[in-house]
Structures are given as C-alpha cells and as structure tokens.
Image 1 (cartoon, rainbow, N blue to C red):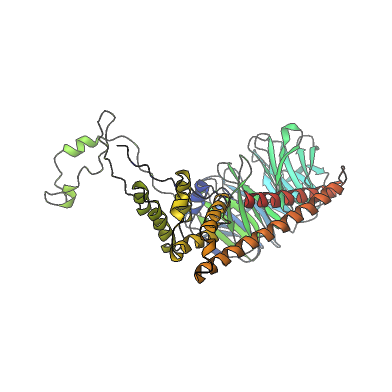
Image 2 (tube, helix red, strand yellow; image 1 turned 45 degrees about the vertical axis):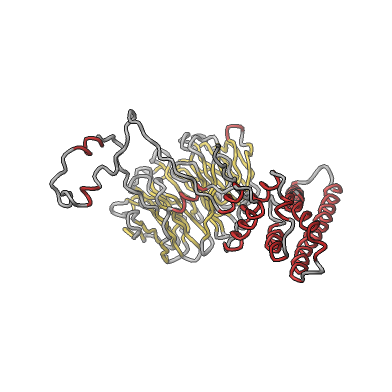
Length: 542
C-alpha cells in the first residue's frame, strides 16, 4: 500500500522578495559603537593596507582610529580652520587633507609631521586625493578649479577650469592614471585628462553632485546628487545606463564595499542603502539616528563607519571567526587507536565513551540511511482516514489556538477538500457553533493576497448552506453581518480605485506627445501611480 502523501501547505506570496543571504551578512555586524566627536563628521577613509585603520575628519582635526579596538590612536591638529577630505595614500604611509584655509597638507602617518603644504586655491578645499602613482595630488575647491600638484616640488602642474560652481567630489580612475572625474554643484560631472589639462567629457546629472564613484575597470561611473543616483557607461561616450531613487532627501556619500560587488549610499534621510551591482536593487537598509554626512567601508568588509551631522560617529564591526583547517584527517585511525592516557580520557569517563563521535564516512563506505516515520498532524490523520469534516474542524481549531494563526494550513485543507470534491460535504450539516469558526476565518482572510478568488467560492457555499438559518441563531446572524461589512468595505474601495484610474487616464490622455524636460518626471510619476493602483485593484480582484 502506498504511503500517505502529506498535504502541501500553500505559502503566501511575498510582495517584496527578501534576500536572506544579504540580510544574514549584514546582521553579523555587531551593535554600533557610538562616539561623540567635536564637530560634524565630514569624511571617513580606511587605510588600504592592513590592519585598515581609518581616518575621521571632524572639525579642525583628523583622528586616526584603530580597527582592532575602535579607539583613537593618533590625532592630527595642525589645522587653523575646519579640515576636510582626509585621505590615505595607497601604501598607508601618508595622509592628505584639505580645509577651509585653502591649503592642502600632507602628513607622515608615523610622526604626524606636516611634510608638504600646497598653496594655490583661493577658497576652501573640500576634496583632495593622492594620484594613482602616489607622487601627485589632485584637489577640487570651492573656487571651481581642479589642480594637479607635484608633491616633490610643492607646485601646481596644471589648473583645470570648466566647472561653474563648487567642486565637492572627485574620483580617480584606477585603470587610467591620468584620468580623474569631478562632481560639482553646477549639476555636471567632468572627466579630465591630467596630461593635456582638457575636459574629456561632460555628464549632466540634473542636480548638485555630492559624490562620484568609478568602477575599477574604468568603464562605468556612479554619481549621486539630490535624492537619486545615476549610472553612466563611459565606454559609450557617457551615456546613462540606469538611474534609481530610494532616498527621500539628498544623498551625501557613495562608497563601494571591499569586493566592489555592492554600493552603499547614505543621505540626509538617515538611511544607509545597500545596492547590488548586478541589478542596482536595494538589498539591505540601515537606519541611523541622525542625517548622514559621510561613511566608509573597510577593504576587508569588517567595519562600516558612518558620520552624522549631530557629531556622532557610528562604528559597526563584523568579527572574523577563526576558520578551521579543511585538510582531511584519518578519522578511522583516531577511532581505533588506543586511548591516550590524558586527563578525562580514561575508561569509564564520558570522553572515553564519546570518542569517535565526530567520525566522518569515507567515499568507499556504505552508509545505511535511517528511515524516520513521518509524524502527521491531526488534520492529516483525518484526511488519511477520509474523515473530511473532522479534518476541517482540526485545522480550524489549530488556527484558533495559535496566536499568529495558521491561515495557510486552513486554506490548503479547503483546497484539498475542493480537489477531492468533498468541500460541500465537509461544510454542510453543521450546527451554528460548528460553522462559526469557519465564518470567522473567512472574514479575516477573505481579502488576503492570493486567497480571495478561492475563498469567495467558499463563502458562496456557506451562504447557500446556512443562509436560511439566520433567523434561528443570533450568533450566526452577527457573524454574517461582520462578513457583509468586510465585503461592502472592499466593494467601496474597488469603486474608488476605478474612479481614480479614470482620472489618471484622463490626465495622461490630455497630455501632449512631446514633454518638456521639467515635466517628463511628472509624467513618469503619474504612470507609475496608475500602474500601482491598477496592480492593487487587480490583485484584490484576482
């Protein structure tokens, strides 16, 4: 005789897919360490070399934190005014920082001495970095000029003009040592050839640019400004690849993770968003207590640090677990070898009895699998013995006892009864106290996503079977009134939604074929709203 096949419980469809692998990765970061700084944290940068200490720019000082214990190792206070954009060189031996004085300083990380002072900008320097070769400095200032410095001579090799507003971000191209991208408040991103001093290309972001990122290959760049991010294909002449907006306020910073497989964005809406570079969808979100000004992630993905406007520095650390050796061991030899005369391994002890517990089978061993007798629920036993009425009672009782409910199991049992053509027999010929639990279930789950179509047919069976008994039972009449209220509320929503769809159709039809640039976004929003409402209506109707 064939074994009884267990009932397959229908799961509710998720409206938004959840990436459990991503969530488990980010959940491994421990609770954040909150440090109160002297001023707003405007820049954070990790050293490219282990142990990946990080520099925090706050007020008129730069503080170097240890990545091992997240405490301050060194403090650099050689600034007369507010410091900005403290960045490490690729070897971690030097640090460059700008400031409101317009002077760029280069520090030795061992002695904290000022090795060079580069003077030439007439306004605050908000972005400065070492070149790819580490022998030059690239800096952008509020005077709208990009300067290319020689560290040895402390002189400016070239001054690059082209922006019409403050330069607030720059990014080097790893695959091209003489190419740099700058983002400005004039809504543009420019690519510069440092050898010729000319602008190679110009990208219009559409809002003041706060951050620029370039992929290691140099063929793609990401820009952030306003509350949206754009991805550009540089190999195709700077054509926009895609754009997305997941923040409610201005995005202030963009960074890669250590493997360049994720992009992190932080904004004034207090959210840190994590995107996958495969489809640029949000895979994780972290909320902070204050607007985010700066952030960074260590090359080893062990730290996520965030600086906020309220002088707070948040440090999240993911501990590295010790990895056990994967070399094969001769477990059979250890099993049959005479026990060592060590403490706790004498005959009669638990360690002696448990020796060989972690024995692993070899490839040539014959493994006898243990057959476990399946354990059925009460409603499955009733289905197995063809007691359909008792099966429905058992699953409804389970749904009532559980606080969170077992709607999916009740729904699956009802569908199984309908498939066997025994649904009417299981529902009919009941007393009012016996049918009321089913009516309560229908009232609670009739509008659940994915259940409406089938449960509406169940409601028809219940109404046909017990509609004539309303005058005999007060409790049954009350439950039918509740069910009627649910249906009326849903019908009222359907009418309002259909009317709203008609209004949106009228607006879209009246719009002209050629939309101006300023109104194109409004049309996209209107179309998106219409699709959302239509999808909601269709979902409820099924």
